[in-house]
Every structure is written in C-alpha cells, then in structure tokens.
Amino acid sequence: MTRIVGLETEYGCLCEDPAGPASAVGLVRNWIYENRRYGLSDVFQRDWDEPPGNGGFLFNGGRAYVDMGHLEYCTPECLSLRDLLLYDRAGDHLINEALQDLGLQHRVGFVRNNVDHYSGATFGCHENYLVRRSAPLSERNILSVLLFLTLRVLYTGAGRVGSSLGAENRGDHRREGADPHFQISQRADYINNELFEWVQFNRAIINTRDEPLADARRFRRLHLLHGDTSVLPTTLALKAGTTSLVLDLLELDHLPQICLADAVGTFRQLSHQTLGPWEVTLATGETENAIGLLRRYHSVAHAEFHGRDPETTAILALWSDTLDRLESDPSTLVGRVDWITKHWLFTRFLEQESLGWDHPWLRSQDLEFHHLDPGRSLGLSLDQTPDPWRFTEAEVNEVRLRPPADTRAHARSQLMRRIAEAKGRYFVDWEVVDLEGHDTLHLLDPFDPVAPDFVRAVPVPEPISSPPADAPPADPQR
Image 1 (cartoon, rainbow, N blue to C red):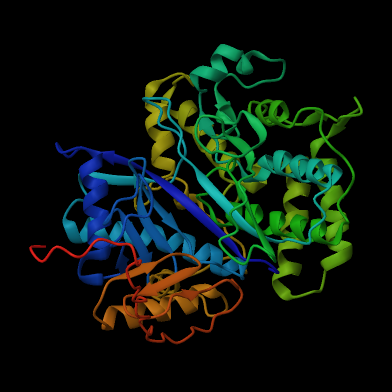
Image 2 (image 1 turned 180 degrees about the vertical axis):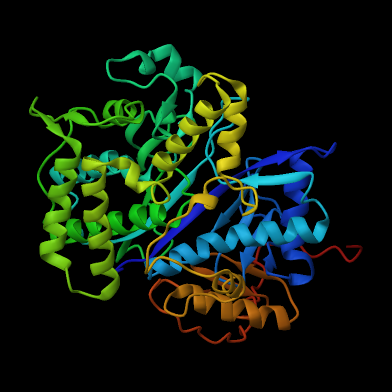
C-alpha cells in the first residue's frame, strides 16, 4: 500500500466464570503486561477513562487496553496489506495464549464480532487510514468516498442474525426486498450519520475528528466506524485493500464523480437485502446497480495502479474477481466473504435441524462463527483464503513480539525495548515516547522506522529573583 493502515478491534467476551466478563477481561489484559511479557503497561493516566494500568503498548508496535469494558487490540502501523492481516490475527493469538496460560479456556471465550444479541449493544472495529493533508477534500470527492464506503458492505459485511431494536422500530426488515431474518452488516443498524465528530451515541460512517497522531501539517487520519470485524482473511484484505486504493484515487483527484441520495439509508437498505440485484438511488434520482458502481471505482483504480507493485496488482485482481462472483453466483464466495459464508452455513444448519430463522439456537451459532479459538470458530473452519493472502500459524506467532520493519512501529518498539532495560518512569504514545530524565522524542513521520536516540535532558536552573524593594522583611520564624 502507499499509506499507513491500522485496525482497532473490540472483542466480545463469553464467560461462564462466576466473576463475570469484566474480571476475565482484566485478567487477560494483566497477563499481557505481566513482567513485561508482551509490552509496557501505561504508568500515567492517558485519559479520564484510561487510568494507569488500563492498557499499554506492545513490543510488536500495537496496543492493547480495556475500552468501555471491552478488551481492545490495535494493530501497529502497517504499510503492507499482508502485514495488516498478520498483525490483526496476532491479537487473537495473544488472547488465546493468555486464556490457555491462565487456565480459563474452558470457561471464557472471546469473539471478534460487533453485536451483543442479549443487550442489543454494539462494539466496533475501527479502521484508520493515513491520508496526505494535500488530498483534495472537495464536497464532490467526499460524497464519492461515502458512496464507495457504503457499497463496499457487499463484500465486507460480517453478517448477523436478526436486527437491533432500533431497526425493528424503523421497520427496516419490512421494506420491499428485505430479508427479515438476516443482515449483511452487523454495524448498519447503529450508524446514524454520514459524517460526525464524536464516536459514541451518534455513530457516523466517517469520524471527522482531526487527530492525525502524526505531523498535522502533512497528514490526516481517516477514522472509519461503520465496518464490521472480519473473520476471514480475504474479507479483511478486500476491506482494507480496496479502501486504500480508493484513497489513492482521492489523493490524485481521480475519483468517479457520483454520490448517493442517502448514504446512511442506503447502508441500512443494503444490509437487509441478502439477494441481488442490489439497486441504489443516486443524488440525481437515478437508480443504478451497486456492483456496477463499484466496478467504476475498480476500473479507474486498475487504469491508474495496475502493475505498480505485486500487492496492488493482486488486490485489484481479487477485487475484480469478487465483483464478478457477487454478480453471477455469490455462493462461490463461501470461505472468502464473511456474510455469504455465514448465510450459506446457517441456511444448511436450519435445513438439517428443521428449525426456523427465529430459533434462539441460531444466535448462539452466530457468536460461534466469530470465536477466536480456531477449534470452535465456525467461520475459520470454512476458510478458503487464496494466495497471496494465506499465512501460517508460525508467521502469526512471530509477529506477536516483532514490529513491522518499514513503519514508525519499529522505531517505537525499539525505544520501548530500551525503556524496559532502563530505570525511570516513562510515557509511550503513538507519536510520543518519553523516558524520565531524557528529552521527549516525537515520532511524527509514520513512515520512518528508525528510532532516534534518547538524549539526557539538561535541567535548566530556575532563575533567582530578588524581592521587590518595598517587600517586607522575611520572618525569621518561617
């Protein structure tokens, strides 16, 4: 890729332990940082809801912490799409290893999904894409990006059984052509805006808070809230790879000039429409096929970037093949696209068990599809990832401690290793590393993997000021 990409995954916790999921989440978090096993725990309060010990940074360049009761794992900054897939899966391996070592594997499980079927709550998988500050953010370009981000759900959705209470009250599942029992997206029910600055309670497709975590003069960070957590590597490769290519087109000002009449409404509509053809309404009032619109983005990206490097050529080929299969026979994407795989599996399960889509057993199976334990994950059991997106367990295990070699994550990891050998208090953040008694280091270029040296800070003596001429004499008793 030509940009830094990172993921933030909030895990659901299934718990039979009497102490409850909050205790299990805390035990796993503590195990990760125990004796600096995989990283350095925060020793300062980072925010009002992030006290010391709530989380920390990992030696692989990522971060793990507790967010609103959920264990959250952030990948390091990745420049290679294959690295992104590897480091995303490394978070799962860390959690599975913790459960095994703590003896909790039979009482506690974690799932990489986005819905609590019992409470109706949602938790996210946020995507972060570095965008150059020079990118032309005209209204027509922003609307074009929104169209792509809305329609990509056809190959990025994780699938879910049922609807949220809000969607049921709106009647989304009763619209013409809607599937009343199954959705393509887990997050669509909870997205309220196209653009919004804050995250909670008013979730948008794009979070507009300008927080680059890098040199603000050169970079922005595109923060996406609407995507589902991917189980199958092919789904994640399509999600991050095609989005990165569309952002390449944005920076060249070569985006197709098309926009939807209502991006949020279209997102919800598509989520409930498991059978094509997927027709959407444009701002002009015309109705067009969603696959055809996505082909326009692929066509421009192919003309601009095909042959740029092997990974770009591979994702362009995967994108084209996926659109072809969606249009002709979506069932050929079983083992590649999450929602299609889940829908295919559940349809056959219900036929075999002579059950209906409203049976509560199905919601339990919905969670099992997303289970982190490879021995329990219904999704991973059907994995048909094509080359070059396949990777071995040994490769994933290796990156639990090793950062990417070509991004800022490598520099931060090296500095953390030096901190681990030193004495003194420290502060680590994405773009700042501080060690007591040394100058603060700023890592403002996410593409720079070279770690600067800690330089001992020279204390500046406080100036001695003389008391004013009319000051009263000092009291010798004080």
